[in-house]
Image (cartoon, rainbow, N blue to C red; front, side, top):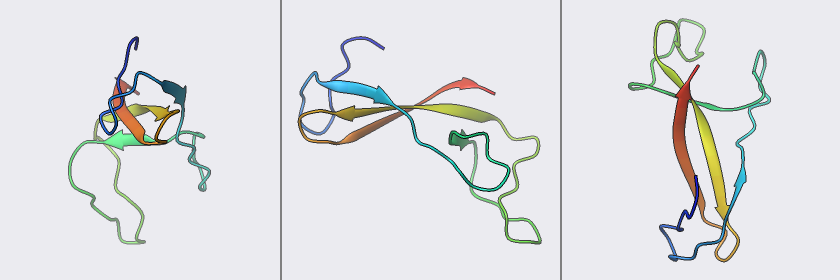
Length: 74
């Protein structure tokens, strides 16, 4: 993504990064899941059969605001 502007301060100073997920059985990166959170009988999120998208994350070098974009389904 080129020429991204911070939606908070308007600067063109976004640097790429990622949101790490280090929970049990995690793939190492967070994903966006379509629909409202539904919990299973043991309290974990129900994910089966629901579209999951990787999250592209950018941080503004000027104001440190995070911009997140759902991109590329798993």
